[in-house]
Length: 401
Ligand SMILES: Cc1cc2nc3c(=O)[nH]c(=O)nc-3n(C[C@H](O)[C@H](O)[C@H](O)COP(=O)(O)OP(=O)(O)OC[C@H]3O[C@@H](n4cnc5c(N)ncnc54)[C@H](O)[C@@H]3O)c2cc1C
Image 1 (cartoon, rainbow, N blue to C red):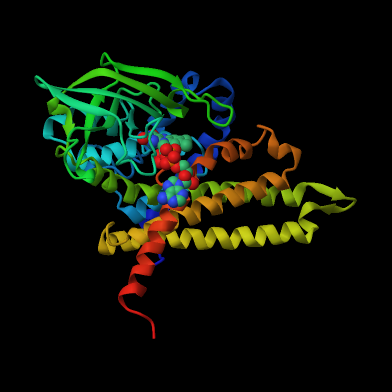
Image 2 (cartoon, rainbow, N blue to C red):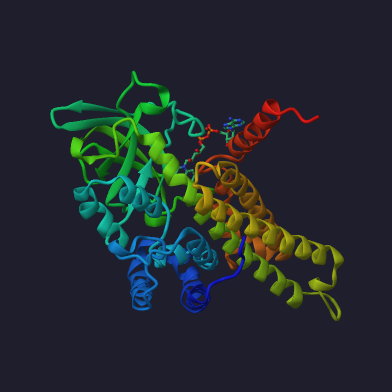
């Protein structure tokens, strides 16, 4: 595997690093104090600068206004952007829009692409993805209660969804619901595009997460679909195809997430080291003189490097053999990188002492919000089980002598 970075990517990542440092990191405390919605005009100004620099929507197709970077190239971008909690949003490649854009591009009809994909890539509005339900296990989503029943030319959707990230303020949702209850389990659900101003799309609340209700892009919504009608032309992909499409959404999406998490690791690591060399702990001594702190720093440096190389390797495997054949590598990075990130955030917080618990640095916010990384897009346990199954199958087939 080639770890070299092309000249083009060196230039792009340098430009992004500088922009994140100068324009976004100073804006974070403002957004966190005043709230996301109040800062949208300021964030739009930054987005205009990104467009002027021709760095808008790095991972999205060129024909829809993106830069068309491949997976490994976008992984490097995602790492740079992950340093700021505003990075992906300001560069137009934020979740959950990025995944929705991907599946609209792969499975959308020409009309759906014009109506939804093009403006989403342009950042004219936002979208959300509504799969997880209150009463059913998200880890086993074939157990789904929401239904979409044909009536005239429409689907009539009923169900209670939650953890629908960024639904507050989104113009459109991609909803998963059962359309074919008698089909084999993995062919029962479909994806349907539902504008959020449709009667029957009823937001219940922004769910408080670790003490914060959040709002707008930073919110996680609970939504009651009550006789919510969407035209049958809003079906995305084939009827009964939701699980197959969801798999398409999750493979490359995990590379993006994991590299964003590496960016978070880098940010926290910098903060930790900077604090260690400046915080006096005894006359003439800073925290950096203490061996236990040195050990944490050495461990974190190695853990981050190992996690980063694993993600780049997984991206390389996806490019070489496709996401399906790289399933194990994709699952492995999901739990390895999420846990590495949580360890690095925790160590950085600890080194900051009381300051680490306050919102005077970004660390406490990351500690609260990124804990979900071990749960969404497949909980640790689910990925570990999948990896172990694949490994053990080989031993069952070909006993080691
Ligand atoms: C911040 C956040 C954002 C989210 N955003 C979205 C979104 O935008 N759209 C959306 O649809 N959903 C979203 N989700 C939901 C997320 O995908 C689900 O929480 C996740 O799939 C787990 O489902 P669950 O919460 O129902 O947990 P459950 O399925 O009830 O599982 C609970 C726990 O059981 C354990 N477990 C599960 N299966 C197994 C197993 N086979 N073996 C051993 N242990 C197991 C795991 O530890 C797991 O954490 C989000 C969640 C969070 C926290």
